[in-house]
Length: 324
Image (cartoon, rainbow, N blue to C red):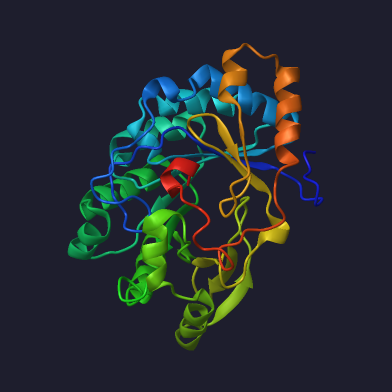
Protein backbone atom coordinates (compact mmCIF):
# COMPACT_ATOMS: atom_id res chain seq x y z
CA UNK A 1 0.00 0.00 0.00
CA UNK A 2 1.03 3.59 -0.66
CA UNK A 3 1.91 5.35 2.60
CA UNK A 4 3.11 8.85 3.40
CA UNK A 5 5.85 9.73 5.91
CA UNK A 6 3.29 10.02 8.70
CA UNK A 7 2.07 6.45 8.17
CA UNK A 8 -1.21 7.37 6.47
CA UNK A 9 -2.35 5.03 3.70
CA UNK A 10 -3.11 6.89 0.45
CA UNK A 11 -5.93 4.88 -1.06
CA UNK A 12 -7.97 7.69 -2.62
CA UNK A 13 -7.26 9.97 -5.59
CA UNK A 14 -9.49 12.84 -6.62
CA UNK A 15 -9.07 13.32 -10.35
CA UNK A 16 -9.93 16.69 -11.90
CA UNK A 17 -10.73 16.42 -15.60
CA UNK A 18 -11.27 20.17 -16.04
CA UNK A 19 -10.95 23.38 -14.05
CA UNK A 20 -13.89 24.89 -15.94
CA UNK A 21 -17.36 25.19 -14.51
CA UNK A 22 -20.74 26.39 -15.74
CA UNK A 23 -21.63 27.83 -12.31
CA UNK A 24 -20.08 30.54 -10.15
CA UNK A 25 -20.63 29.39 -6.59
CA UNK A 26 -19.74 32.26 -4.31
CA UNK A 27 -17.25 30.21 -2.26
CA UNK A 28 -15.44 28.87 -5.34
CA UNK A 29 -15.20 31.04 -8.49
CA UNK A 30 -15.77 34.79 -8.79
CA UNK A 31 -18.32 36.14 -11.25
CA UNK A 32 -16.75 36.87 -14.62
CA UNK A 33 -13.80 34.54 -14.06
CA UNK A 34 -12.51 32.96 -17.28
CA UNK A 35 -8.78 32.44 -16.64
CA UNK A 36 -8.94 28.69 -17.12
CA UNK A 37 -6.33 26.25 -18.38
CA UNK A 38 -6.43 25.79 -22.16
CA UNK A 39 -7.24 22.31 -23.54
CA UNK A 40 -3.65 21.72 -24.67
CA UNK A 41 -2.63 22.09 -21.00
CA UNK A 42 -5.10 19.43 -19.88
CA UNK A 43 -3.95 15.88 -19.39
CA UNK A 44 -5.23 13.69 -22.21
CA UNK A 45 -7.34 10.66 -21.42
CA UNK A 46 -4.34 8.44 -22.26
CA UNK A 47 -2.18 10.38 -19.80
CA UNK A 48 -4.88 10.20 -17.13
CA UNK A 49 -5.23 6.46 -17.65
CA UNK A 50 -1.50 5.94 -17.18
CA UNK A 51 -1.47 7.89 -13.92
CA UNK A 52 -4.49 6.04 -12.54
CA UNK A 53 -3.04 2.71 -13.66
CA UNK A 54 0.14 3.33 -11.68
CA UNK A 55 -1.76 4.60 -8.64
CA UNK A 56 -3.78 1.38 -8.82
CA UNK A 57 -0.56 -0.64 -8.86
CA UNK A 58 0.53 1.25 -5.74
CA UNK A 59 -2.63 0.32 -3.88
CA UNK A 60 -4.94 3.28 -4.51
CA UNK A 61 -8.42 1.78 -4.72
CA UNK A 62 -10.76 4.76 -4.89
CA UNK A 63 -10.97 7.30 -7.72
CA UNK A 64 -13.35 10.25 -7.75
CA UNK A 65 -13.79 12.20 -10.99
CA UNK A 66 -14.15 15.91 -10.25
CA UNK A 67 -13.61 19.35 -11.79
CA UNK A 68 -14.42 22.23 -11.90
CA UNK A 69 -17.53 20.65 -13.27
CA UNK A 70 -16.41 17.38 -14.85
CA UNK A 71 -19.37 17.07 -17.19
CA UNK A 72 -18.37 20.17 -19.16
CA UNK A 73 -15.55 18.06 -20.62
CA UNK A 74 -16.63 15.86 -23.51
CA UNK A 75 -16.21 12.10 -23.21
CA UNK A 76 -16.19 11.68 -19.44
CA UNK A 77 -18.27 8.50 -19.63
CA UNK A 78 -15.73 7.01 -22.06
CA UNK A 79 -12.91 7.92 -19.68
CA UNK A 80 -14.84 6.41 -16.78
CA UNK A 81 -15.19 3.14 -18.65
CA UNK A 82 -11.42 3.01 -19.17
CA UNK A 83 -10.66 3.76 -15.52
CA UNK A 84 -13.22 1.30 -14.18
CA UNK A 85 -11.49 -1.48 -16.11
CA UNK A 86 -8.05 -0.84 -14.57
CA UNK A 87 -6.71 -3.50 -12.16
CA UNK A 88 -6.94 -2.44 -8.53
CA UNK A 89 -9.59 0.26 -9.00
CA UNK A 90 -12.50 -0.88 -6.87
CA UNK A 91 -14.53 2.30 -6.42
CA UNK A 92 -15.15 4.90 -9.15
CA UNK A 93 -17.33 7.87 -8.22
CA UNK A 94 -18.19 11.34 -9.51
CA UNK A 95 -18.71 14.81 -8.02
CA UNK A 96 -20.92 17.11 -10.10
CA UNK A 97 -23.18 20.13 -9.85
CA UNK A 98 -25.74 18.06 -11.85
CA UNK A 99 -26.64 20.82 -14.29
CA UNK A 100 -25.72 18.47 -17.17
CA UNK A 101 -26.48 15.21 -15.44
CA UNK A 102 -29.97 14.59 -16.80
CA UNK A 103 -28.64 13.77 -20.28
CA UNK A 104 -25.58 11.83 -19.11
CA UNK A 105 -26.70 9.87 -16.04
CA UNK A 106 -27.37 6.54 -17.73
CA UNK A 107 -24.15 6.61 -19.78
CA UNK A 108 -22.08 7.42 -16.70
CA UNK A 109 -23.68 4.63 -14.68
CA UNK A 110 -23.22 2.15 -17.51
CA UNK A 111 -19.55 3.18 -17.74
CA UNK A 112 -18.87 1.98 -14.22
CA UNK A 113 -19.51 4.97 -11.94
CA UNK A 114 -21.60 3.72 -9.04
CA UNK A 115 -21.77 6.67 -6.66
CA UNK A 116 -22.23 10.40 -7.16
CA UNK A 117 -22.04 13.50 -5.02
CA UNK A 118 -24.13 16.48 -6.11
CA UNK A 119 -23.47 20.04 -4.96
CA UNK A 120 -26.77 21.61 -3.87
CA UNK A 121 -26.65 24.55 -1.48
CA UNK A 122 -30.29 25.67 -1.63
CA UNK A 123 -33.74 24.36 -2.52
CA UNK A 124 -35.04 27.85 -3.29
CA UNK A 125 -34.71 28.76 -6.95
CA UNK A 126 -34.05 32.46 -6.34
CA UNK A 127 -31.47 31.78 -3.65
CA UNK A 128 -29.79 29.06 -5.70
CA UNK A 129 -29.52 31.54 -8.59
CA UNK A 130 -27.99 34.13 -6.28
CA UNK A 131 -25.46 31.71 -4.77
CA UNK A 132 -24.41 29.91 -7.97
CA UNK A 133 -25.70 31.77 -11.01
CA UNK A 134 -27.47 28.59 -12.13
CA UNK A 135 -30.98 27.18 -12.46
CA UNK A 136 -32.18 24.95 -9.65
CA UNK A 137 -34.51 22.94 -11.88
CA UNK A 138 -31.59 21.62 -13.95
CA UNK A 139 -30.04 20.22 -10.80
CA UNK A 140 -33.29 18.65 -9.64
CA UNK A 141 -33.79 17.08 -13.07
CA UNK A 142 -30.24 15.71 -12.92
CA UNK A 143 -30.83 14.22 -9.49
CA UNK A 144 -34.01 12.45 -10.59
CA UNK A 145 -32.22 11.11 -13.68
CA UNK A 146 -29.39 9.82 -11.49
CA UNK A 147 -31.81 8.02 -9.21
CA UNK A 148 -33.56 6.48 -12.24
CA UNK A 149 -30.19 5.38 -13.65
CA UNK A 150 -29.44 3.39 -10.51
CA UNK A 151 -26.76 5.41 -8.70
CA UNK A 152 -26.55 4.42 -5.05
CA UNK A 153 -25.89 6.24 -2.86
CA UNK A 154 -26.56 9.75 -4.12
CA UNK A 155 -25.03 12.26 -1.73
CA UNK A 156 -26.06 15.90 -1.54
CA UNK A 157 -23.18 18.24 -0.66
CA UNK A 158 -24.36 21.44 1.04
CA UNK A 159 -21.84 24.12 1.99
CA UNK A 160 -23.43 25.77 5.02
CA UNK A 161 -23.14 29.57 5.19
CA UNK A 162 -24.48 31.92 7.84
CA UNK A 163 -27.16 34.29 6.52
CA UNK A 164 -27.05 32.49 3.16
CA UNK A 165 -28.56 29.04 3.59
CA UNK A 166 -28.19 27.97 7.22
CA UNK A 167 -31.95 28.37 7.63
CA UNK A 168 -32.56 25.62 5.03
CA UNK A 169 -30.89 22.67 6.71
CA UNK A 170 -34.10 21.14 8.06
CA UNK A 171 -35.69 21.57 4.61
CA UNK A 172 -32.72 19.76 3.07
CA UNK A 173 -33.09 16.96 5.63
CA UNK A 174 -36.75 16.52 4.63
CA UNK A 175 -35.82 16.60 0.92
CA UNK A 176 -33.21 13.88 1.37
CA UNK A 177 -35.58 11.69 3.40
CA UNK A 178 -38.21 12.05 0.67
CA UNK A 179 -35.86 11.05 -2.15
CA UNK A 180 -33.57 8.59 -0.34
CA UNK A 181 -30.49 10.79 -0.67
CA UNK A 182 -27.63 11.14 1.79
CA UNK A 183 -26.95 14.65 3.11
CA UNK A 184 -23.43 15.96 3.71
CA UNK A 185 -22.92 19.33 5.37
CA UNK A 186 -19.62 21.11 4.70
CA UNK A 187 -17.82 24.00 6.40
CA UNK A 188 -16.44 26.81 4.25
CA UNK A 189 -12.68 26.84 3.65
CA UNK A 190 -10.47 29.92 2.99
CA UNK A 191 -9.29 28.91 -0.49
CA UNK A 192 -8.60 31.83 -2.81
CA UNK A 193 -10.27 35.22 -2.51
CA UNK A 194 -13.73 33.72 -2.97
CA UNK A 195 -13.19 31.14 -0.24
CA UNK A 196 -11.89 33.76 2.19
CA UNK A 197 -14.85 36.00 1.42
CA UNK A 198 -17.29 33.13 1.93
CA UNK A 199 -15.58 32.27 5.21
CA UNK A 200 -17.00 35.49 6.62
CA UNK A 201 -20.22 33.44 6.65
CA UNK A 202 -18.55 30.44 8.32
CA UNK A 203 -20.79 28.17 10.37
CA UNK A 204 -19.36 25.74 12.91
CA UNK A 205 -21.05 22.44 12.09
CA UNK A 206 -20.80 21.31 15.70
CA UNK A 207 -23.50 23.92 16.38
CA UNK A 208 -25.60 22.63 13.48
CA UNK A 209 -25.31 19.07 14.74
CA UNK A 210 -26.49 20.19 18.18
CA UNK A 211 -29.40 22.05 16.55
CA UNK A 212 -30.44 18.95 14.60
CA UNK A 213 -30.17 16.81 17.72
CA UNK A 214 -32.87 18.95 19.35
CA UNK A 215 -35.28 17.96 16.56
CA UNK A 216 -34.18 14.45 15.60
CA UNK A 217 -32.69 11.48 17.37
CA UNK A 218 -29.21 11.14 15.85
CA UNK A 219 -27.42 7.80 15.98
CA UNK A 220 -23.71 7.48 15.20
CA UNK A 221 -23.33 5.76 11.86
CA UNK A 222 -20.93 5.02 9.01
CA UNK A 223 -21.05 4.88 5.23
CA UNK A 224 -18.75 3.26 2.67
CA UNK A 225 -16.44 5.63 0.84
CA UNK A 226 -13.07 7.21 1.29
CA UNK A 227 -14.07 10.71 2.31
CA UNK A 228 -13.75 12.55 5.63
CA UNK A 229 -17.42 12.88 6.63
CA UNK A 230 -18.48 11.78 10.11
CA UNK A 231 -22.00 10.34 9.85
CA UNK A 232 -25.10 10.10 11.97
CA UNK A 233 -28.40 8.46 11.08
CA UNK A 234 -31.76 10.07 11.74
CA UNK A 235 -33.66 7.54 13.84
CA UNK A 236 -36.73 6.08 12.19
CA UNK A 237 -35.41 6.87 8.70
CA UNK A 238 -32.74 5.67 6.31
CA UNK A 239 -31.20 9.15 6.16
CA UNK A 240 -27.55 9.56 7.03
CA UNK A 241 -26.10 13.01 7.55
CA UNK A 242 -22.38 13.52 7.15
CA UNK A 243 -20.44 16.42 8.67
CA UNK A 244 -17.28 17.57 6.87
CA UNK A 245 -15.47 19.83 9.31
CA UNK A 246 -12.04 20.95 8.08
CA UNK A 247 -12.07 23.93 10.44
CA UNK A 248 -13.93 22.98 13.63
CA UNK A 249 -12.77 19.36 13.81
CA UNK A 250 -10.10 18.69 11.22
CA UNK A 251 -9.42 15.17 9.99
CA UNK A 252 -5.80 15.55 8.88
CA UNK A 253 -4.54 12.64 10.98
CA UNK A 254 -6.64 10.24 8.89
CA UNK A 255 -6.24 11.94 5.50
CA UNK A 256 -6.04 9.23 2.84
CA UNK A 257 -6.17 11.30 -0.35
CA UNK A 258 -4.31 13.39 -2.87
CA UNK A 259 -5.61 15.40 -5.81
CA UNK A 260 -4.57 15.41 -9.46
CA UNK A 261 -5.45 18.67 -11.23
CA UNK A 262 -6.33 18.80 -14.90
CA UNK A 263 -2.86 20.13 -15.79
CA UNK A 264 -1.20 17.08 -14.22
CA UNK A 265 -0.18 18.61 -10.89
CA UNK A 266 -0.47 16.39 -7.84
CA UNK A 267 -1.68 18.43 -4.86
CA UNK A 268 -0.96 16.84 -1.51
CA UNK A 269 -3.30 18.96 0.64
CA UNK A 270 -6.07 21.50 0.10
CA UNK A 271 -4.63 23.73 2.79
CA UNK A 272 -0.95 23.64 1.79
CA UNK A 273 0.99 24.45 -1.38
CA UNK A 274 2.96 21.19 -1.61
CA UNK A 275 2.61 19.84 -5.15
CA UNK A 276 4.40 17.78 -7.78
CA UNK A 277 4.08 18.31 -11.57
CA UNK A 278 3.56 15.20 -13.67
CA UNK A 279 2.53 16.57 -17.08
CA UNK A 280 5.99 17.13 -18.55
CA UNK A 281 7.12 13.75 -17.24
CA UNK A 282 4.17 12.08 -18.95
CA UNK A 283 4.72 13.96 -22.21
CA UNK A 284 8.33 12.87 -22.35
CA UNK A 285 7.11 9.29 -22.53
CA UNK A 286 7.94 8.03 -19.06
CA UNK A 287 7.43 4.35 -18.34
CA UNK A 288 5.06 3.13 -15.64
CA UNK A 289 8.06 2.35 -13.42
CA UNK A 290 9.47 5.85 -13.86
CA UNK A 291 6.07 7.34 -13.10
CA UNK A 292 5.83 5.13 -10.03
CA UNK A 293 9.06 6.63 -8.66
CA UNK A 294 7.80 10.16 -9.26
CA UNK A 295 4.53 9.39 -7.46
CA UNK A 296 6.44 7.95 -4.50
CA UNK A 297 8.56 11.13 -4.37
CA UNK A 298 5.41 13.25 -4.50
CA UNK A 299 3.76 11.40 -1.60
CA UNK A 300 6.82 12.18 0.53
CA UNK A 301 5.81 15.85 0.26
CA UNK A 302 2.39 15.34 1.83
CA UNK A 303 2.23 17.59 4.92
CA UNK A 304 0.98 16.55 8.32
CA UNK A 305 -1.92 19.01 8.35
CA UNK A 306 -3.46 22.08 6.77
CA UNK A 307 -3.16 25.59 8.19
CA UNK A 308 -6.57 27.04 7.34
CA UNK A 309 -6.93 28.45 10.86
CA UNK A 310 -3.36 29.68 11.37
CA UNK A 311 -2.78 31.02 7.84
CA UNK A 312 -6.10 31.56 6.04
CA UNK A 313 -4.41 33.76 3.44
CA UNK A 314 -1.93 31.04 2.43
CA UNK A 315 -3.87 29.37 -0.41
CA UNK A 316 -4.42 31.67 -3.38
CA UNK A 317 -5.60 29.03 -5.88
CA UNK A 318 -9.32 28.42 -6.36
CA UNK A 319 -10.96 25.12 -5.44
CA UNK A 320 -11.92 24.56 -9.10
CA UNK A 321 -8.22 24.60 -10.05
CA UNK A 322 -7.13 22.18 -7.34
CA UNK A 323 -9.97 19.76 -7.96
CA UNK A 324 -13.07 19.45 -5.82
